[in-house]
Image (cartoon, rainbow, N blue to C red; front, side, top):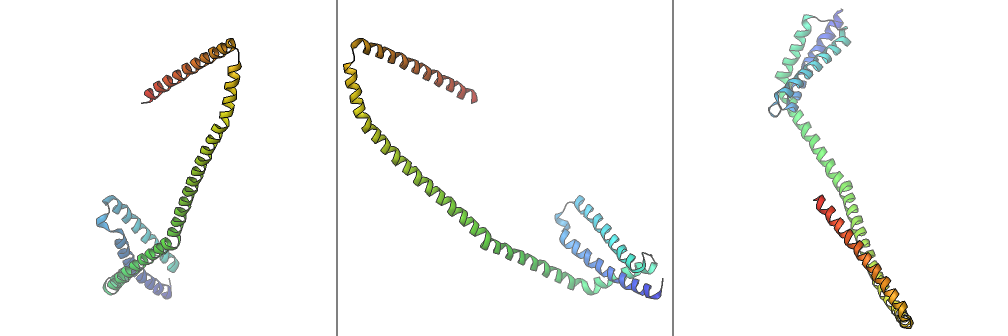
Amino acid sequence: MTLTTQFMTMLAMIGMGTYFGAALDTYNRFLQRRKRKSWLIFINDILFWIFQGLFIFYVLFHVNQGELRFYIFLALLCGFAAYQSLCKKLYLKCLEWLISFVISVCHFIVKLFRIFIYNPILTLISMLITTIIMIGKGLLALLKTIWKCTVVLISILIKPIKWILLLFWKLFPKPLKNSVEKLYNELAGKFRTIKNTIIKVFAKWKKGNK
């Protein structure tokens, strides 16, 4: 391994040590250990250390083909120590500012979504439902009016027919009248029997469902 490669490896590992310090603070900031369960913290810690180890080795592989030397660990430690002493406070302030900025942007986007998309759609749906209800009430009132007019018209038309039928009924011979009345009474009795049977069956079915 040439001196240039060794120098590049040292610089890369110092940078990775600094990166690791920032990544560790970022990880702890978002993990919030006090609010998490111990088993979840354990799993996250293992995944974090595995990812950081693989990432550092990936950078090392690109710099010196993955050759491990003692000074590599010293460079990582120097980079981490430099971050802790020089950059940590500034990085944490920048991280908090960035988090606040992202939250503000998200709130602003949500507010814009509510103002320009959600509220207009909700208002349009409300107006549509109100219009449908009003049209339905109007149609129902119109149908009621038509039904009343129809009933009145039918009653007016039925009266002359009723008078004509009563006139014919009076002209019928008495034996025929008796036969018709007997048939009418029999049919009426059968209809009443059927009606009572249906009512009893429905009552039993309703009682059984309870």
